[in-house]
Length: 197
Image 1 (cartoon, rainbow, N blue to C red):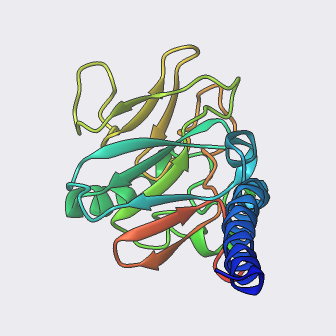
Image 2 (cartoon, rainbow, N blue to C red):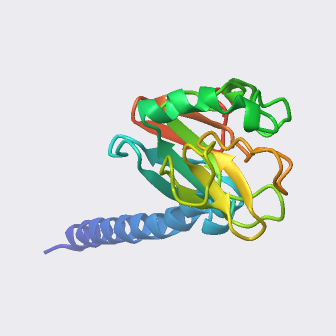
């Protein structure tokens, strides 16, 4: 074999080896670079929106998700729950949601985009406790105006299934409705208003 043939063969080998090593090096550099753009767990907890699949949410079922380090409740109301919301106006402190505890699109009787799906921050507006979910219409000790909702055992505040506060309890405002919208019929995005991104 002559010298030119050996040099060409060696040159091809070195070129191929350099290309492979360069490609692997580029991949090692790309992974951390791309990971840098993905929000960290801390950033997600600090406020990144949360997607919730409501397709499997049964009527009468409540699920708990976390957004900004707070519990957020997603509940599918029954037809009876929706009807009962109309009957409570006389015993509620802010039945028409005049105080800014919800986005404008949730300023209605059911305090939600869709009457059947409720989204609330699960923190009592009195001192920050987490109320208990009592969906029963007539549990013992809740009073005759109770049609299901949330009870804060720390100081005795009551909220209906739209998060509206009853009169005569320590909490002065309704539960907070976080910004949210439906991406499609089965998915709600919590933490962002539609068109905000």
